[in-house]
Length: 98
Ligand code: FES
Image (cartoon, rainbow, N blue to C red; front, top):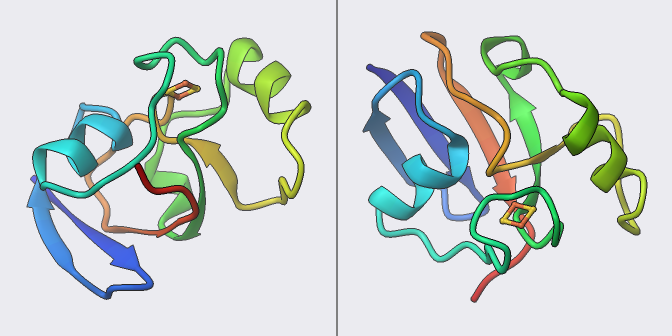
């Protein structure tokens, strides 16, 4: 288990390590856009990781290629559907809502 904090709401959830940020967010009842259902094709699940970046899986080629096409991407950007949670707490800032 690890802790996932959501901004801007400040809500905190105990979540299972080893699942994607997207699954953790949806399981927690957060509304996050995910138009391609986690295939790294749409970019709608883009968010900023404000803390705990090193606890997440490394960015792979598919995610990197999609991030390159999204306006407003920064050094804290991840696709929620591609980032897998580790054991350390993570804080994310949601950018898109369904
Ligand atoms: S759900 Fe489409 S890129 Fe993540």
